[in-house]
Image: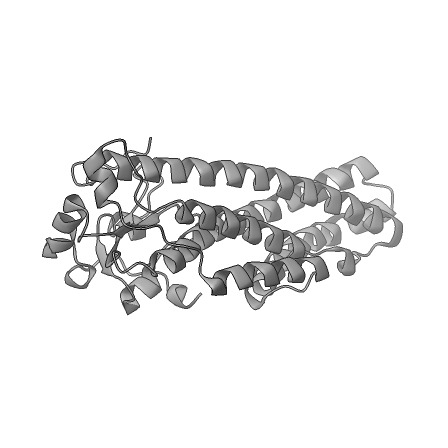
Length: 292
């Protein structure tokens, strides 16, 4: 279960359990897609190596990540939507808790339409602007790494000073560095869609008036998330729009919808002005991050 020392006394056990389950589901999804990304890089690198050895050039048309990113994003959207549609406040066996739980929020028509459109785009391999921008960044990093290695060793290879196995090793090592960058982008996208989709669903409910920023607390927690841990954001506020997770690459933070009219613990959090984001000064995010 997620450890949240500064929040555990404020949140109900069901809230903590919900966050724990959410983190586990996101981690399992990421593990599957890391494996898929690794397979994609292996297959792509094998083709690139063969092309370099035979022609001395990389066939850039064979390198593409748009489809992969679209497939990943669509699965995350569906997973997060299903999770949110199940109810943003877990129903416990306690009768009072069941009565206090707000009504379920349904997936908005706009989001359902978007998912259907993404299915069509995925079939046609026509990426959205966001997917294209990220895919171009991954492709550029991949090509720079591979081509840099080839420029360094191509002459030795043609002269027989470097063998084919050595070339393969050098290129695979360079591709591995690009894979790390791609993995970071993919995992950050998981956080992005988990929070964005669920917010679109939670925002429909009049019971939700605020959101609570919850960071996973461990040695990897950054200053951006650590200084926002436990802060309260008004629903629909500009601060929330700019600072909802992810707040940086590899961000693992979440937002928890607060229903103060139906949950006494949530009401105490919302009424605590020391937690209001507008009254605090957390570490500034990286320049232009909020416009991503």
